[in-house]
Image (cartoon, rainbow, N blue to C red; front, side, top):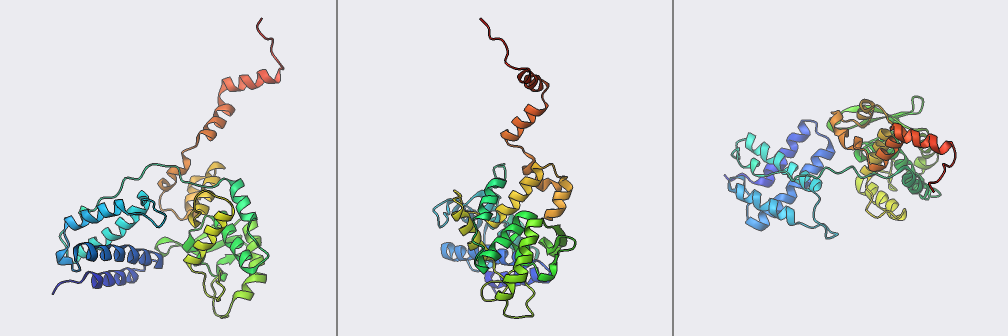
Length: 321
């Protein structure tokens, strides 16, 4: 009998769950592959693994390159590669189970990503954004607390939303989060974020909680663990209210935190451990200094620049006749 691709996807997702993959990974894989399978059925009438060919995959990759978002923009290379990655992993699994030949998954190529510096906000921008939040309302105070924690500790969105009340240690000034691959790690939290968490736990969360057994730190207005789409809406609104030119994302807080730590000459190994990176190489983009950093270093360290500063301290020099 033909192997139905939707049924094989359900089996693939169940296998991911059995391997203890994170809910975020399972959800992302499901979204990417379902989107691909809908396109495959609509464009080529293909619904079974036996009918899938390299030509279908190349056709999908071309369609992906032409696809435009709801704002009318082409997909960015990183976004396209996330979709390609999800589909490739699914097809690799089908190959391993004998449903596809080895050549089929290899027909998908990753898009070359430009080596750009990670986009991050300067500290002055971040401070203005955070101070612009309305904390007179319980939800506004909760929002400020979440964003302060994102900026202070560089957490991923899923790590923030997965935090439980018991995960906050005020004595040691840390939070315990579960990151990628369900790996637990302890992350430091700054004094400002801790102060907001303390105020939130004392005066805001008790007004939101409905079920005393719920241990989620951040709750929505229904008393449930705050979902990602609500956090996304909160962050987008905060960015728009701050007058930012581009849509703000939760990941921007992680980038901004990382940029400030690197700029402050923090130990890269310590930063990597704090962020939950497997390799130091992940930080390579952050250590590519911008021209302002280079100019500052040049002024401070080049001997001729020091000569110039000494000349200025000696007072005005005689002008040529």
